[in-house]
Length: 212
Image: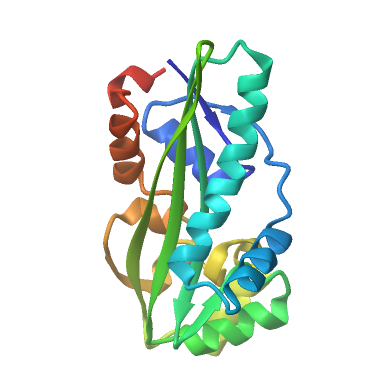
C-alpha cells in the first residue's frame, strides 16, 4: 500500500523512512495563516494550540488527499501534520529570524514546554471517497538550565532552530540542550509514529503493510 506525506518537512520524511516507509511527497496548497485567521474569526477568539495544529494538519492532508483522489490512480494513505510549541502560556511556531530564536532560547532555558502535534490521515482509493482519521499528540520538553549564552548564540548561528517549531530539535544539534521528554519522542521530531499507526488502524490499514 502506498503512502503520501502531505508535507515538505525533512524531519517528517526522515521519521517515516526510519520506520520503514518510503513515501511519496506532495506540497499542500494551503495558506496556513489564512486558515488560522478564518477559524479565529468564526470562533471570535484564537484557537487553543491543540485545536490549531489539528485544523492545519487536516487542511494540508485534505488538500493532498482530494487532489490524489481526483487523479484516480492512488491507492493508499495520505498523512499530514502540524506542530506548535507552547511555553510560559505562549504558543510558538517557527522563529525565522536569529533575533527571535535567541529570545526564545533565553526564555526556554531551564523551563518545560509542550509540543502540540496535529495528525490527519486519509484513506484514498480508486473506488472510495477519502476517509479521514485525526488525533493530536503532545509531549513535554524540558531544557537544561545551565545552557550558556555562548551556546545559545552558537546554536542560533548554526541556522538549525530558525525553521523548526519552537526553535529546537531533539534529534540533531539541539538534542544536547534537552534533558527530558515526556511522551512519544517522535512527536518532538515532527510526527508521532505511534499516533499515525493508530490512525492507520482506524482506517483499516495495517502498519506493517506500509513498510517499503
